[in-house]
Image (cartoon, rainbow, N blue to C red; front, side, top):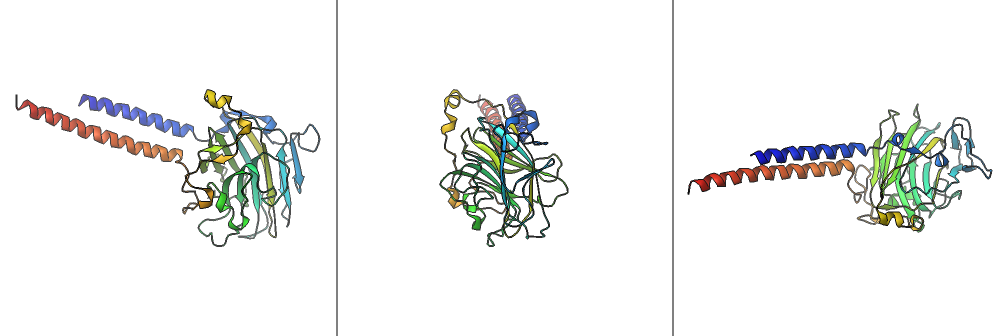
Length: 337
């Protein structure tokens, strides 16, 4: 039975290591490197229409000393702000501090904020104030329900979309046909600011939210197999229609993630990558579960941990049973000699 004890001790060590890996994967941009050329912070220096500006804005956007208001609480407004410096980082994390508030009660408000990492910038359009059929990544903070049949989820709803320029955003269905995952979040009319983190690393897209201002991230989206090129631009936009809200950006902080890549990945021309996602199903076959998450998404860190834990326990049980059987056989064989 000594070998069994050694095996159990080794299994326990592996279990602790796996747990530490999962915990270390929790978003923590403060431990990384802030990239100021891609960050928007008070007092918003470098924002304007001059040649030296790092951020440019359009439409109803109003830049104050405390916030960047993409739209005011008025009908039929559109506004956006865009980083003018292309991002050449392969692995990055963007922390967005924002606030959505207004006089509208219950469902009488709209439409929401979109956060972008796209090839083109400053192109107004129908998708939360930006162009449709874009190239790149969009994170939508949608505050108004258009699809009255989609009552299995509550709004505001946060979702992600990757587009190669060929897909239209379906407002009537709240973007369900093209979303990669999402979650509901009560982010309107909070007494404090709300936070959203977008992490892209090693082909994995993770979106975390902090709604209660407790400095605790909650996972909203976790998608593997995402391919995004370098050289695209970060931005934020918002729109109102017949209903309205104040859509404020307080800060956008970009962090470089220090990640090792294989020689093949390093030698690849990342500017030539086409935005895409390797899903088990086509986005058009997207069927939501009660939580609003896409069934075809890869396992999250905790799901992988639980799966490995179950597998490990199974191995331990088999090993113990095998050891007992082996010992019984030895005792039986001794009787015949």
